[in-house]
Image (cartoon, rainbow, N blue to C red; front, side, top):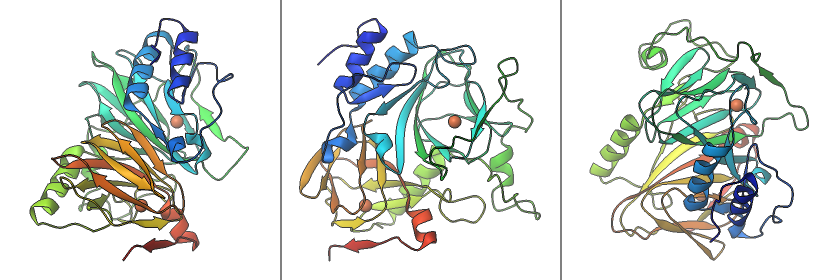
Length: 338
Ligand SMILES: [Fe+2]
Ligand SMILES: [Fe+2]
């Protein structure tokens, strides 16, 4: 196993050995994309060590070498939706921008004081929180804490292939002013909400705190509920209409009981998973992919797959899936093992 070393070249080599690339680093000379199920699995060890070293030697922010400091699977961007991982070191703040893609984030670890700023509103970061930045909402990230903040991004690719509609705040005024009071979103997007509704565009940003997600999982677990294909699965609902999280991406979280083995299914949507707790395996078209806490892996469209929790305790997987747009457009399909 290669080490992260000290130089940019060392880090590039380390990331390439883990089938990863880093923003602000050279991308040439990397290994060709892998094939088969191995092409969609990236280990936490590679992601975490790569991020921590990037945090030391790649600068970020309005005067940095890169807009965002990320680590991405070499093969990940070949999918219609994808995940990467980002780190923001203490004191750092990124330059705000907005574009025509939906960007979403799942917090892995963050100190008090680290926030996502979206549409002039500040959202705290706690492990397991999901925060959305819908298309054309301004966003920047600000770590006012004393430890690194690490999160997983979930993206769609938008619908403007080859055209990048992207507006950045200027370098001499690179940050959003926080105009909204603390907790504005959660306080106005619950069951008591403005009668006028939300504007149709852009969609509002939203934070889904882990405390609420965990409470829902726990209640379903206590009730003994579950699905033979997914275990206990939740969707993080849109604050606008209660449907999927965003028109292009559904955020989901599922709990697999100790040693649970699900039935197989296949669908023509793509799923990217983040292993939040525990460990397990997913068997995709007969090929077994063992995952551990922190790993990212993906199931490509139309491949038979089932889950196995190899743990003696519960395992929890977060995922993004592009079924929402596919269903709306009328070409989503699913088949289930009976
Ligand atoms: Fe962005
Ligand atoms: Fe599935």
